[in-house]
Length: 399
Image: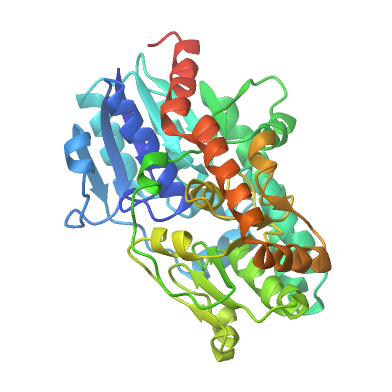
């Protein structure tokens, strides 16, 4: 098949959840014998690594500039969801339409809601199926963010904004799902949320995955200090910022041991700046690879209180054999044996006690790590997941 994959950014290096998923899908489709053209926002001069060899063609368009004034106008003067306009570009749309006129594609697959604004432009193409890969149940994500922010009077204005966006995104997500020939969610939970907006639409589930072998090679270790704890993620992403603030302020003081916390991830938000004053906490910023940190830590934490989708950060930690403590939300969407390979707790005291128990019991850490590696290979290696994606295509009469 000839497949056009549309992404919000060049998925290389695959350093974020969205990039990891898009890269895994792209590589898996090519390895399965299909031809993939990639169209993304980005700079034509940027390093695309192995994508250049994997793709038939890579097309990049400069990301549109959208100011806070533009966003405020949309909030006050329109009923559109902010995310519907975030990456809209007349130049991107023009080049997409031209490409479809020049080349036939069996499938145009949209990776995430940010680029799904171009679905109408593809509907005119003959004999082309539209696949909407949702990444997140975005309306539900915004609803949870609003709920968390309402608990803090200083963030009521943010909660109000998120609540408005949740309502608008719900309508938008439903509209996008109805236009697509196939809709993919990354977890049964996300599929259930999307099904509420489009009850007549079948929602396929294809979890996000990783190439497990890449995480189990030999890596140099890093001295993270005694009783080390690691968290990974894009650190200007709201759910990750909230997770670390909650962890450091509410959970960490309850941990019995003296610990060393390393927060690994690009673009730390200014809200995290007070953490830099704490001697036992380090924010790395951008790193070439999270793997040395995952292979070196005693405990990996995922104290997420908001978010949706499959948490690729957890899959990476599992593949590296980490002992994981996570909230139920962080582990949602995972298989039962994957969930049984970590400690799942929601209360602050219970979270702290779970960390202390793991730090005091190396054998227990090893047992959890071994179970995690087995579960992630069984359920979340791309060799297992790409056939599920191809089954979606077969359901459209392709393949």
